Image (cartoon, rainbow, N blue to C red; front, side, top):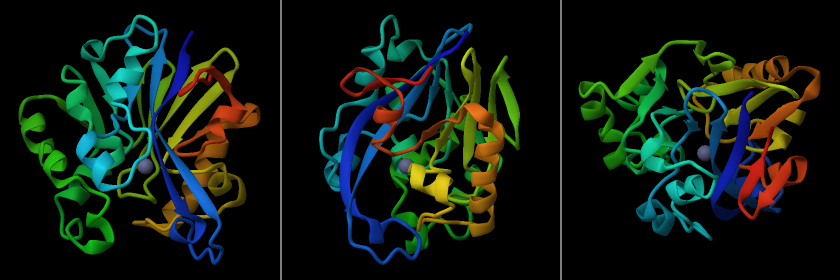
Length: 252
Ligand SMILES: [Zn+2]
Protein backbone atom coordinates (compact mmCIF):
# COMPACT_ATOMS: atom_id res chain seq x y z
CA UNK A 1 0.00 0.00 0.00
CA UNK A 2 1.05 3.57 -0.58
CA UNK A 3 3.17 5.68 1.77
CA UNK A 4 2.97 9.42 1.30
CA UNK A 5 5.38 12.12 2.44
CA UNK A 6 5.17 15.91 2.47
CA UNK A 7 8.70 17.26 2.02
CA UNK A 8 9.39 20.87 2.97
CA UNK A 9 12.04 22.77 1.00
CA UNK A 10 11.45 26.41 2.02
CA UNK A 11 9.44 28.96 3.98
CA UNK A 12 8.22 32.50 3.38
CA UNK A 13 6.63 35.09 5.63
CA UNK A 14 3.79 37.29 4.47
CA UNK A 15 0.57 38.75 5.86
CA UNK A 16 -2.97 37.43 5.71
CA UNK A 17 -4.16 40.53 3.79
CA UNK A 18 -1.61 39.69 1.07
CA UNK A 19 -2.91 36.20 0.71
CA UNK A 20 -6.56 35.57 1.53
CA UNK A 21 -9.27 36.99 -0.70
CA UNK A 22 -10.57 40.31 0.71
CA UNK A 23 -8.96 39.66 4.08
CA UNK A 24 -8.54 42.90 6.01
CA UNK A 25 -6.31 41.58 8.78
CA UNK A 26 -2.58 42.18 8.70
CA UNK A 27 -1.76 39.12 10.74
CA UNK A 28 1.54 37.36 10.05
CA UNK A 29 1.31 34.29 7.85
CA UNK A 30 4.06 31.79 7.03
CA UNK A 31 3.94 29.63 3.94
CA UNK A 32 5.76 26.33 3.82
CA UNK A 33 6.88 25.06 0.41
CA UNK A 34 6.51 21.35 -0.24
CA UNK A 35 6.87 18.62 -2.78
CA UNK A 36 5.11 15.33 -2.09
CA UNK A 37 6.30 11.78 -2.62
CA UNK A 38 4.18 8.65 -3.01
CA UNK A 39 5.99 5.36 -2.41
CA UNK A 40 4.87 1.74 -2.38
CA UNK A 41 3.69 1.45 -5.98
CA UNK A 42 5.57 0.07 -8.98
CA UNK A 43 7.65 3.29 -8.98
CA UNK A 44 7.96 6.38 -6.80
CA UNK A 45 5.61 9.19 -7.80
CA UNK A 46 6.59 12.79 -7.18
CA UNK A 47 3.96 15.52 -6.91
CA UNK A 48 5.40 18.89 -7.99
CA UNK A 49 9.04 19.85 -8.32
CA UNK A 50 9.58 23.04 -6.30
CA UNK A 51 12.05 25.65 -7.60
CA UNK A 52 15.75 26.44 -7.85
CA UNK A 53 18.05 28.97 -6.16
CA UNK A 54 17.05 31.84 -8.48
CA UNK A 55 13.46 31.90 -7.23
CA UNK A 56 14.58 31.32 -3.64
CA UNK A 57 16.73 34.48 -3.81
CA UNK A 58 14.33 36.61 -5.80
CA UNK A 59 11.30 35.83 -3.66
CA UNK A 60 12.76 36.01 -0.17
CA UNK A 61 12.47 32.32 0.68
CA UNK A 62 13.93 31.24 4.05
CA UNK A 63 15.59 27.88 4.74
CA UNK A 64 15.66 26.86 1.08
CA UNK A 65 17.03 23.46 0.23
CA UNK A 66 16.85 21.86 -3.19
CA UNK A 67 13.68 19.77 -3.43
CA UNK A 68 15.79 16.94 -4.88
CA UNK A 69 17.90 16.92 -1.68
CA UNK A 70 14.81 16.55 0.51
CA UNK A 71 13.49 13.79 -1.76
CA UNK A 72 16.79 11.94 -1.37
CA UNK A 73 16.54 12.12 2.43
CA UNK A 74 13.67 9.64 2.13
CA UNK A 75 15.25 6.20 2.28
CA UNK A 76 16.02 4.53 -1.01
CA UNK A 77 14.87 7.33 -3.31
CA UNK A 78 17.10 9.05 -5.87
CA UNK A 79 16.02 12.19 -7.74
CA UNK A 80 17.31 10.68 -10.98
CA UNK A 81 15.15 7.62 -10.31
CA UNK A 82 11.90 9.58 -10.40
CA UNK A 83 10.12 8.64 -13.63
CA UNK A 84 6.70 10.09 -12.91
CA UNK A 85 6.04 13.63 -11.67
CA UNK A 86 2.46 14.86 -11.34
CA UNK A 87 2.48 18.64 -11.73
CA UNK A 88 -0.40 20.31 -9.91
CA UNK A 89 0.09 23.54 -11.87
CA UNK A 90 2.79 25.60 -13.55
CA UNK A 91 3.39 28.32 -10.95
CA UNK A 92 7.10 28.74 -10.21
CA UNK A 93 6.97 26.99 -6.85
CA UNK A 94 5.49 23.82 -8.34
CA UNK A 95 7.24 23.64 -11.71
CA UNK A 96 10.49 25.64 -11.85
CA UNK A 97 12.50 22.83 -10.23
CA UNK A 98 11.60 20.19 -12.81
CA UNK A 99 15.20 19.86 -14.05
CA UNK A 100 16.14 18.42 -10.63
CA UNK A 101 14.20 15.33 -11.71
CA UNK A 102 15.58 14.96 -15.25
CA UNK A 103 14.24 11.50 -15.97
CA UNK A 104 10.64 12.21 -15.10
CA UNK A 105 7.65 12.39 -17.35
CA UNK A 106 5.67 15.43 -16.20
CA UNK A 107 1.90 15.07 -16.01
CA UNK A 108 0.06 18.35 -16.44
CA UNK A 109 -3.45 19.39 -17.41
CA UNK A 110 -4.19 20.62 -20.93
CA UNK A 111 -5.93 23.75 -19.58
CA UNK A 112 -2.81 24.63 -17.61
CA UNK A 113 -0.48 24.44 -20.61
CA UNK A 114 -3.01 26.37 -22.71
CA UNK A 115 -3.30 29.15 -20.15
CA UNK A 116 0.45 29.77 -19.81
CA UNK A 117 0.86 29.95 -23.59
CA UNK A 118 -2.32 31.98 -24.01
CA UNK A 119 -3.46 35.61 -24.02
CA UNK A 120 -3.50 36.39 -20.28
CA UNK A 121 -0.35 34.67 -19.03
CA UNK A 122 1.81 37.76 -19.56
CA UNK A 123 -0.56 40.14 -17.75
CA UNK A 124 0.83 41.33 -14.44
CA UNK A 125 -2.08 39.77 -12.53
CA UNK A 126 -0.64 36.38 -13.49
CA UNK A 127 2.93 36.74 -14.69
CA UNK A 128 4.41 37.23 -11.23
CA UNK A 129 3.63 33.62 -10.38
CA UNK A 130 5.63 32.32 -13.34
CA UNK A 131 9.30 31.57 -13.83
CA UNK A 132 9.22 32.37 -17.54
CA UNK A 133 12.48 30.62 -18.39
CA UNK A 134 11.34 27.38 -16.77
CA UNK A 135 7.83 27.77 -18.17
CA UNK A 136 9.30 27.99 -21.67
CA UNK A 137 10.85 24.53 -21.14
CA UNK A 138 7.35 23.08 -21.48
CA UNK A 139 7.68 23.29 -25.27
CA UNK A 140 10.91 21.29 -25.79
CA UNK A 141 9.84 18.83 -23.11
CA UNK A 142 6.58 18.31 -24.97
CA UNK A 143 8.38 17.78 -28.28
CA UNK A 144 10.75 15.39 -26.51
CA UNK A 145 7.87 13.25 -25.30
CA UNK A 146 8.47 14.17 -21.65
CA UNK A 147 5.23 16.04 -21.06
CA UNK A 148 2.09 14.01 -20.44
CA UNK A 149 -0.81 16.35 -21.10
CA UNK A 150 -4.04 15.09 -19.56
CA UNK A 151 -7.58 16.41 -19.55
CA UNK A 152 -9.80 16.07 -16.50
CA UNK A 153 -9.58 13.15 -14.08
CA UNK A 154 -7.15 10.32 -14.75
CA UNK A 155 -6.03 7.34 -12.72
CA UNK A 156 -2.25 7.38 -13.21
CA UNK A 157 -1.49 4.21 -11.25
CA UNK A 158 -3.91 1.93 -9.38
CA UNK A 159 -5.33 4.05 -6.55
CA UNK A 160 -3.55 7.28 -7.57
CA UNK A 161 -5.74 9.74 -9.48
CA UNK A 162 -5.32 13.31 -10.67
CA UNK A 163 -8.43 15.51 -10.66
CA UNK A 164 -8.64 18.80 -12.52
CA UNK A 165 -10.22 21.43 -10.29
CA UNK A 166 -8.93 24.75 -11.69
CA UNK A 167 -9.79 27.85 -9.66
CA UNK A 168 -6.36 29.02 -8.51
CA UNK A 169 -4.95 28.39 -11.99
CA UNK A 170 -6.71 27.36 -15.19
CA UNK A 171 -5.75 23.70 -15.05
CA UNK A 172 -4.87 23.09 -11.42
CA UNK A 173 -5.05 19.41 -10.57
CA UNK A 174 -5.14 17.73 -7.18
CA UNK A 175 -4.10 14.15 -6.39
CA UNK A 176 -6.00 11.49 -4.46
CA UNK A 177 -4.26 8.38 -3.16
CA UNK A 178 -6.01 5.34 -1.69
CA UNK A 179 -4.22 4.12 1.44
CA UNK A 180 -4.98 1.71 4.29
CA UNK A 181 -6.10 4.61 6.48
CA UNK A 182 -8.37 6.22 3.88
CA UNK A 183 -8.07 8.42 0.82
CA UNK A 184 -5.33 11.03 1.10
CA UNK A 185 -5.97 14.22 -0.87
CA UNK A 186 -2.93 16.26 -1.85
CA UNK A 187 -4.64 19.57 -2.53
CA UNK A 188 -1.59 21.57 -3.59
CA UNK A 189 -2.86 25.11 -4.17
CA UNK A 190 -6.52 24.15 -4.42
CA UNK A 191 -6.22 24.80 -0.67
CA UNK A 192 -2.97 26.51 0.32
CA UNK A 193 -4.05 26.49 3.98
CA UNK A 194 -6.57 24.47 5.98
CA UNK A 195 -8.42 27.74 6.44
CA UNK A 196 -9.24 27.69 2.71
CA UNK A 197 -10.90 24.31 2.46
CA UNK A 198 -12.33 24.28 5.99
CA UNK A 199 -13.99 27.71 5.96
CA UNK A 200 -14.51 28.21 2.21
CA UNK A 201 -12.05 31.14 2.20
CA UNK A 202 -10.57 31.73 -1.27
CA UNK A 203 -7.02 32.94 -1.89
CA UNK A 204 -6.19 36.03 -3.93
CA UNK A 205 -4.58 34.39 -6.93
CA UNK A 206 -7.48 33.14 -9.01
CA UNK A 207 -8.47 32.33 -12.57
CA UNK A 208 -12.02 31.27 -11.57
CA UNK A 209 -13.61 31.91 -8.21
CA UNK A 210 -16.53 29.49 -8.77
CA UNK A 211 -14.03 26.77 -9.69
CA UNK A 212 -12.04 27.48 -6.56
CA UNK A 213 -15.18 27.10 -4.41
CA UNK A 214 -16.18 23.92 -6.27
CA UNK A 215 -12.63 22.67 -5.67
CA UNK A 216 -13.14 22.93 -1.90
CA UNK A 217 -16.25 20.74 -2.25
CA UNK A 218 -14.37 18.27 -4.42
CA UNK A 219 -11.58 17.95 -1.84
CA UNK A 220 -14.12 17.11 0.88
CA UNK A 221 -15.91 14.59 -1.38
CA UNK A 222 -12.70 12.81 -2.28
CA UNK A 223 -11.36 12.79 1.28
CA UNK A 224 -14.48 11.25 2.80
CA UNK A 225 -14.89 10.90 6.55
CA UNK A 226 -11.22 10.28 7.30
CA UNK A 227 -10.39 13.82 6.15
CA UNK A 228 -6.83 13.00 5.21
CA UNK A 229 -6.43 16.39 3.54
CA UNK A 230 -2.93 17.74 2.94
CA UNK A 231 -3.05 21.51 2.41
CA UNK A 232 -0.52 22.86 -0.06
CA UNK A 233 1.46 25.43 1.94
CA UNK A 234 0.26 25.09 5.52
CA UNK A 235 2.71 24.68 8.44
CA UNK A 236 -0.15 22.83 10.19
CA UNK A 237 0.55 19.79 7.98
CA UNK A 238 3.34 19.01 10.47
CA UNK A 239 0.84 19.15 13.37
CA UNK A 240 -1.85 17.05 11.73
CA UNK A 241 0.43 14.29 10.48
CA UNK A 242 3.57 12.57 11.73
CA UNK A 243 6.89 14.41 11.58
CA UNK A 244 9.56 11.82 10.81
CA UNK A 245 12.41 14.35 10.98
CA UNK A 246 12.49 18.12 10.47
CA UNK A 247 10.99 18.88 7.06
CA UNK A 248 9.73 15.35 6.45
CA UNK A 249 6.11 14.65 7.33
CA UNK A 250 4.63 11.18 6.86
CA UNK A 251 1.00 11.49 5.79
CA UNK A 252 0.16 7.78 5.53
ZN1 LIG B 1 2.12 27.20 -4.48
